[in-house]
Image 1 (cartoon, rainbow, N blue to C red):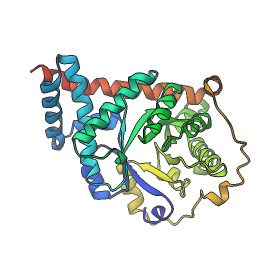
Image 2 (image 1 turned 45 degrees about the vertical axis):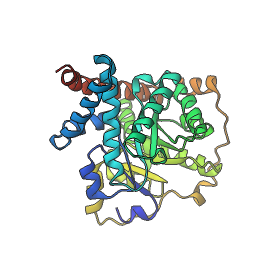
Image 3 (image 1 turned 180 degrees about the horizontal axis):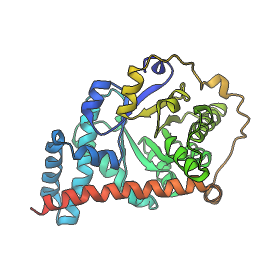
Length: 317
C-alpha cells in the first residue's frame, strides 16, 4: 500500500468510518449500498436515530419525513467521515433520479445544505451522479455553481469523454463490474491483470485524459482483487474496499508504476466531442456499458429501498 501511495492517492470505499480511521486514506467514497450496510452496524445506531428524529421534526407527513431522514443520514455519515479524512467525501444523489436532471439538482442542493448545517464545507464534498446523459447535464450545472461532482457507474470511454466535456471534478470508472460482465458473457473464468477488461477500460480513459490535457481526476473503482489495483498503479486515485486495503497493507509484493502522464501522451485516441445523440448511440452500441449502468442503478435503488424500509417504521413509531 505504501508503494502504491507513492504514485496514486488512496481512497477508501466504505461507510464504516471506524475502518477509515484505522486505514487513514486521503478521501472516502460511499454509495447507497455502503450507507445501508453501515446503518446496520450497532455502533452507528445513534446516527440512524438522529436522522429519524430530524425527519420526524421537519417532515409534514411520513413520506416527507422519510425523504429528509434518508438525506440527513447520508450527510451524517459524510460528516463523520469528513472528520477522519483530510480530503474529499463523496455522497451519492438518489439513484432513482438518474434520468431526471431537475430533481437531481434539487437533491444535490438539499444534500449540500444539510452538510452546511452540519458544519462541513461544500469544498469537501463530491456530489456523486450516475453516468447517464441526464446526470451529465446535472454535472455541468453543478460545476458552474462551484459544486464538485463525481461521475459514477462509469463503464465506457464515451461516458468519460462526456463527463470531461462537462467539467466533472472526478470520474469513477469501474473495474470489477466490467470483469464480471466479461466473465459471464465469455465463460472465461479468469483474466491476467494486464488483460483484465476493467483494467484496460480504466487505462484507456486515463490515457485519453492525459493525452488531451483533461484535468478531471480519474479514480478507478470497484475492484475484485489486488492484482487489478496493482495493474493501475499510477492512476490519479483508486477507491478501494477495506478488505483489499488490508490485503495490500500486508503484502510485500514489489511492483512498478504502470500508468503515467508521460506514457499516456502517445495514446493515439483522437479527441472527441460528444453530444446527446452520440452519447446515447455509443452507449447503445456497448452492451456491457449499457447493461452495467442499468444494473448499477437498479442495485443502488434496491439498497435505497431497504434503508427506507428500515427507517419508515421508526418514523411512524
